[in-house]
Structures are given as structure tokens and as C-alpha cells.
Length: 450
Image (cartoon, rainbow, N blue to C red; front, side, top):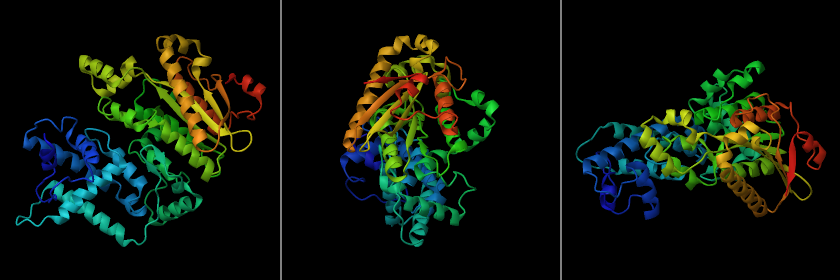
């Protein structure tokens, strides 16, 4: 499909697209066409097929917007709402919040610009008209607050300031949008994760009884959504607005957005449930700077291979994606816990890395073939955290690595041990020593690294 025919795929009945590129520039257009039409958008697809793909993708985006209509009005169509919209849109490729907004606004404008003699009424025009009405209702609510919380790899720190959190809580409460879910003491970045349609159900199924905790923990071969629920369960059980800690709710699996996007189609779109290291670090910066937290935690996950390797396995097995996540060792997750906290003087940082490799012989045996890849992964994370600290006028004061299996989770499953460790930390049953207490860390199974 040529550039003109790519654009032609957007020429749906009841819409008028101005001549030239439909989107701001060629780079943006390429990204968007891949999401709407598939990676072969430049191939000579039949015109009907191109339009059918575009219609399906646009309908998915419009429905994602309408599915967040209450929050869209409450937050005046802010960036965090577009993050949630993009996360609900199962397209041919992962679409960013900014690009999702461009597509919806462009097509709504195209709908309003249509002046044809025939009044086409289709599913797509109906959805577009509803999105236009939503935007008009939102504009009529008055001046918008600025909730610029998340953009691809970074959280805008102004979005979680105490004033914004207070205003957000008041706004959502007064509109009676939700029956206290997600809980209003969570910041909007956390709410974006907790508002996933399946998360609440999974958390309720997990239960809160201590005796059931280990049994309810996800495993190294659980579905990605179960890993998110495993992390989020500790936060929803124990986090309060006054808690001295913050827990990043999405497991971190990638260095940057482009890495995650490479896995999107291959993993049945489930790769986007994992976050980037850049997002975690930006979340930590916000927690330290604007929320006065003294500790930020997150789960790191790793699996072997590349998307092309995995595609070969998937093509050979012809398994469905869920089965590949849960039954194939190729996507078996290795988990650890990253803990950042202030240490020393002048805002220096301590990195505590809970890693089952340090103390679990069964884990060492399982992942021995991957030990060099894991070593490389650790080094990349450490280097990036150090660079991030320097970028923010700080430095890594000290690093501790290791830990013990203190939660009673099976010692042959790193995901269960990592989730169990997060539960101990968030519940207060395990307290880390003072940053300068080397003996205290050694008693907990950690070794100091340079």
C-alpha cells in the first residue's frame, strides 16, 4: 500500500480527510499507519482490505475512548486518560498515548468536516459522533486542570504534586465516578494500572487472608496480567496516602518503549502490561520529589531471546498466545525486586536489589544456561540507574544485592519469591536496615557491591 493509499484507507464513508498527510508529519504517519493497518501498510493491499483494517482499528480506538468517558470528563481529557485509552486499544502495533490522541482528534475533525450529500450512518460514524459529543461535554465543564502524568517513557512530575492529587481526589469523589475503585489515595499513575478491567476481579479472587497469600502468588509462567495483579495486591492491601513507600505496579521488563514495542505483536499484545525501566525511574523521581516517599520499589522481570526467536517457536507450535506464556520455557519470567531510597548526604541514592539468584540453588540451576544474559541485564539496569541519578543531580551512594527467601514462597520460583518479598516490605513485617548498617544488610542475606 503506497503512502497515498495508506491515507486513502482513512477515507471512510461519512468522513472528510484534507489533502496531504492526514497526520502532523511523515514520522508520525508511519507509526500510526503501522498501528492501524499493520506492519505491511506499504505493501500493495487491496483498497477494500486497507479500508476494512482502518475501520476496525478506528472503531477499537473510539470504543476505548468511550470506555473511559467518565474519567475523560473528570480529568478533562488529560494525558493520563490517553495512556489508559492507548492501553485498551488492541491494534496491529502498540500505539502511544500521544499518537492515539492524534488519531482520534484527526478522525473526529474529519467527521465534523464531512459535507457530503449522502448522510452516511455506519458503526464508525456513530462511534465518532459519540466521541465528538464527549469532547463537547468535557469542554462545557469549564477550565481544565493539568494532569500531565505520563508520556510513553516518562512521568511529568507536576502531575502528582500534592495540589493535583488533592484536586483529582475531590473531582473524582464529587462526580461519584466509581465505587472507591481504584482507591482514591492512589496517584493517577497507579490508577491507570488498577483500572484495567480484569485487575479488580483478579485481586478479589486472590483474597486477603494471610494463610492464602503464598498460594495466590503468581508464578514464573503466569500470564502477564497475573503478574501485574500479584504486584498490585500488596499495594492495595497495605498502601495508604501516608505510607512512606511507593510501589510501581507494572513489572519492569524493558529498558525503553521501543524494546517493548518490538514484542507487542509477537506476544499477543500482552507485552504492554510490562513497563520500561525509564518509566519506573521517572515514577521514583516523582515519589521522592513530590510525595516525600522514603522508599520506592518495583519488580523487574526478564526472559530470554528476541521477538524473532519467539516467532519461530510460535510458528512451529501453532499454540495460542496464552498457552505460550504459560507453558513454554522461552517466556518463563525471572523476577527480582529493585528498591531505591535516599542515603547519605545531598540527596544521594541507595540501590537494594533483591535477587533470588544470590541465595537459591534451584534458581541457579534453572537459569544457569542464561546466567551471562542475566549478568548483562543486571549491568544494563545498574548503568541506567547510575546515569539517571547523575542526570538528576545525585549519585548512587551504595548498592546491596541478594536477600533471603523470607516469605516462605517456593525456592524454585523467582516470581513467587519476589512477590512474597514485596508483601513483606509493604506490610511492614520486614524492615530494611539503616542505609549505613552493613551488618544489618548482611543479616538479611545481602552483600555490598561496588
